[in-house]
Image (cartoon, rainbow, N blue to C red):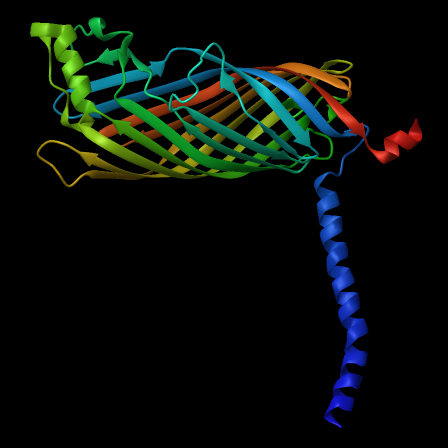
Amino acid sequence: MKRLVLFFVLVTLWPCYAVSQSDSIGVIRRTIREFDHLDERYIEPQHYVFSAMLQGSYSIDRYSLSSSGLIDQSITFMPDAKVKAGPYAGWKWVFLGYCFELGKLNFDDGRREFDFSMYSSQVGVDLFYRRTGSDYKLRDANLGEGIDASELNDQPFDGLKVGITGFNVYYIFNHGRFSYPAAFSQSTIQKISCGSWLAGVGYTRHSLDFDYQSLQSLINEKMGEHSVLLDSGLMFNTVRYYDVSLSGGYAYNWVLAKNWLLASSLQMALGYKRCYGETAGIDQRGFSINNFNIDGIARFALVYNNMKWYAGASAIFHTYNYRKSRFQTNNTFGSLNVYVGVNFGLKNKYRQKK
């Protein structure tokens, strides 16, 4: 009897369950399609499934450290300019690639970079992983009022290693008429000039390994009898920065001529920073920074795209600020990219039109 009752219950409920499952799948499909909903008067959708690209990149990486103790001091580090190149491959929203430094036979120099981007008309996601080598140089040093530290300019310094890992997720409000991917992933074509407000969230983790004793030795060597001691605020070995941010900004695409696009984007981010470090000197308790600061992301692009072939240049810059009464740092990094690529694998609906 119990089995018979169970049978009737299953027969009665199964159609409802099947309809519920079908509705859920339908909702998911409609949601995914909505991510790429476009007003085709303004934007030409991508006609191809796959893309292959060769990109050259000029990297910028600047670290500035400063202290406000008994003596106000600041030091800026930058490596020599590097040109990298590498292949990229794309599939629908996803674009992956790897760049290596040109003219360098030793690939195991401690530098590691990985970028992952996923774009749709509504939402974009950027993941990044960067580890520098130990090839920084002192570009500017202010060791106190009236102190001439010009002997330190452009001196190699292998006591600094930097890493950054993080992600940005952003939403494009006017996604039906404005195409962010048209400027930065070449996956659509903007046909009429248009702009959009942007909003996003981000998380980054910065690591900074600093050999202040090597820096003090370099100061003593180059400045001789005019040498000065580093302020205690700069006497640290390791610092870890954690940044959670909310960003907002505006982007605009100018259609210069058929298939030509000039784009710019600026986002300001309110970031909550938390920093841990190991200091030297009398105070061995270390220090922590817990505060809010304003960061920024700027993007520029010039693109030619006739849907089959594309070429262009883009520049992306990030800046992060950490400020407290005792210790401050500014990190600016970015890249200037030049690329050429081809799309292939025509979608069925466009193949049928031909």
